[in-house]
Image (tube, rainbow, N blue to C red; front, side):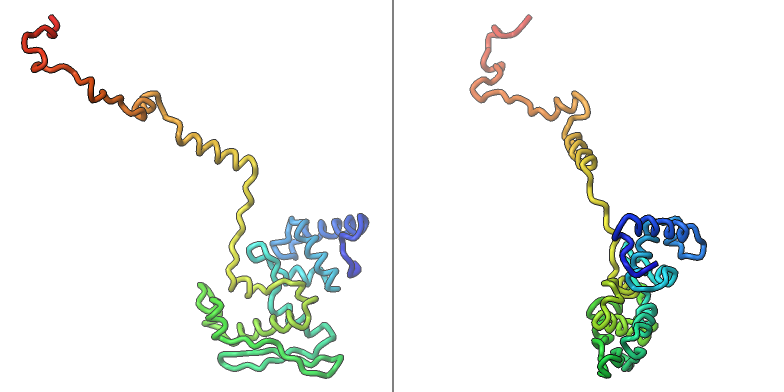
Length: 232
C-alpha cells in the first residue's frame, strides 16, 4: 500500500478494509488487533503515513487507557532508520540523560532535552505504584530522553503519540461514556421517586398535626363545677 491516507477516497478505504479484515483474522498480530477491524484500519493508516510495514506498527503501537502509544524502542528505531540522523547516542549519568545525534543534512550535532531523576520525582513518575524508575533508572532515563528527542526533532515519526512508558507514568484513567438522554431521564425519574411517599400512612405522617388555637381550649372540670357539660 502507498503512503497516502486510506480515507482519501472510497476505493482506498475499501481496499484498506479488505487488508484490515485479513489482518484481524491472523493469530500473528497482537491480541488487541485480533477480530478488531477498526483498530487494524487505524494501524494501516498509521503505517501508510509513516511508510512502514503494518506488522511493524501493530507490534509497536499499544493502547494504554484508550490512547495509542509507541514503545520507546520503536521510536529509537524510527529515528535511527529515518536517514535524517546518525544513530542516537546518550550522555548518561546516574541521575540524568540526554539523547543526541548528528543531523546528516547539516553535520550539526543536535541534543534533545535533558531528563533527570529530579524531574521524574517532580512529575510524579518516580514514586508511582509499579514504577520502573526505582529499579531501572538508567534505562528509563534513556527511554524518556529518546522520546523527547524524537518529539522535538522528528514529530512526524511520533505522530503526536506518547510512548507506553509516558502514558503509564501519567496514569491516564478510563473515560466514562457520556450520559445519554435515556440515562438523564432515568436519573430524573429516580430523583422524583425518592420524594413520593411509599404508602398513604406515610403521607399522613408527613402532614403536620393541626394545633388547637390558643383561644379555643378544651373545657375542664374547673370550667364546669356543676357538671352541666358532662355527658350521660
